[in-house]
Image 1 (cartoon, chains in turn green, blue):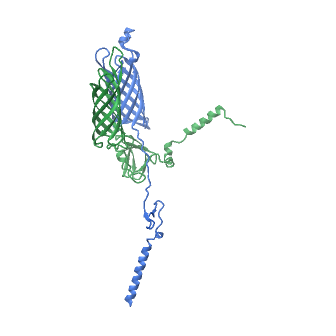
Image 2 (cartoon, rainbow over the protein chains, first blue to last red):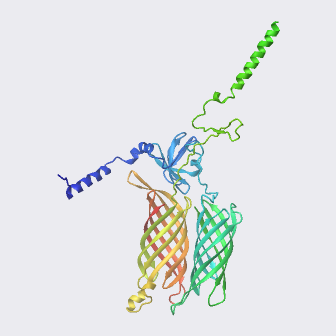
Image 3 (cartoon, chains in turn orange, cyan):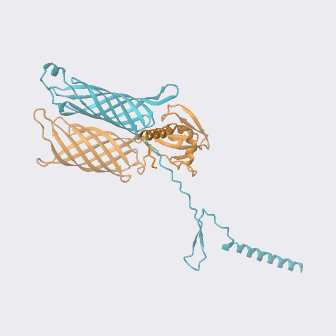
Amino acid sequence: MTFRLNAAQRWLRLTLIGLSFISTPSLADEAPRARNLQPARYVEVSVEEAYLEVHTGPGRGYPVTRVIARGEKLDILMRRTDWYKVTDDAGHQGWVDRESLSKTLLANGEKIKLDDPLHRDFDQSPWEIGFQTGNFGGGNVNSLFTRFALTDSLAAEAAVAQTLGNASSSVMSSVGLAHHFSPHWRISPFVDLGVGMVKITPKSTIVQPRSRSEQFGYYGLGTDLYLTHRLLLRADYRSYTLFSKDVPNEDRNEWKAGFAFYF
Amino acid sequence: MESRVRVLLLSAALAGSTLLSGCSLWPFHRHPAPDSVPVEVSDAQGSTPPVVDPTVTRRQVKAPKIKSSDFELGGFIGTYSAQDFGVNPVYGARLAYHVSEDYFAEGLFGTTQTGLTSYEQLSGSSQLLTRSQRQLTYYDVGFGYNLFPGEIFIGRGRAFNSAAYLEGGVGATKFAGTTHFGVMVAAGYRVLFLDHVAAHLDVREHVFTYDLLGFKKTLHNLEPTLGVSVYF
């Protein structure tokens, strides 16, 4: 005899299974037991100082509601800016600042090494994203750029820029290389070189303007100023040469400044 | 006679101690190496005695990488008040990077379909712009400061982290067939209902100059929006 569930029985069964999940006790209550059974997903550290203050939020103003004593263990769940979310053996969660957490010990007895946002490690943080605004040939320019550090000194760069002039507007995309002379200095000058494409659209309110695309090359020089916490200011000058098909090559100068962050 | 016996005994004792200490060099007298300490015996030269290299292999503890969640991606809806062209629904997206607990950088993109001017409504058939020209799109890149970080309390047992922030930036607005450079200032409020989910209430002002009517005019367009974003 074959046993088949009819539709109502199937729904009843699914509902009961669903309810059994819902009625499972809170995970927070089971956290300490479950934590020992699972493979290590998080970095575990033990407190080495006399105590460790745990805040309710990722900021210096959030109140301290828990103090972890020396020798107790913590799991580091995640990082946001310079604050780390941790959980203790009892499953209580909170936020610890980078400086306090850097004094804790790993399971092998060594001090934990945390990213120091004030000193860039190009291996750990090779990417940069930034935005600059300035002047391009008399008009405004907005530029979104990214860089990837190939070495401490050499970086590949790419940018998309929009120029907004009185007579025309354009969208430029470029790739190039940048070389920093002293990448570990707080003020770090660089030169860069690259090529790209530009689509120029003349401004016209009477007739539909006809846009044109050109290739260009550029060289430039500028400087970074490392401010704080993965943030830097960048100001640079670039000289562009547009390789026009119909008219002689055109030169344009660009000055711009903005910010970037690395990660 | 007695001194000779003493000399003999002393000589025997010396010889015995020398032999015993020499025996300690024999390999079978060595204590067995612990399991965790591998012992490599080199006999490459054949005739040379085996050289023991007591290399202790450290147990490599590779700690998992700590996840970071400094980026924030989200969407918003609201109203965009285009000066002369009415108040219309707007929707858009935001991508932010939280540099520190105080500062964040943010890129915004929004679009709205603007309406008719009062002149167009009164005149009936006269249209200043085509439908595609009425589509207003903008992008802005700004820098924000968390002015008042804090918590909000809902009931007795729930607290959520929050922050009131100020923001300023530059960008461009495409409207009436032309793209205009502009600046943006904003004030907002963010509540994190979960560690990775935030709700936003923002009021932005977009300022740019255009010459649609034959003379330059500076517009101040207000845009209040509500949004949701996730951290990653």
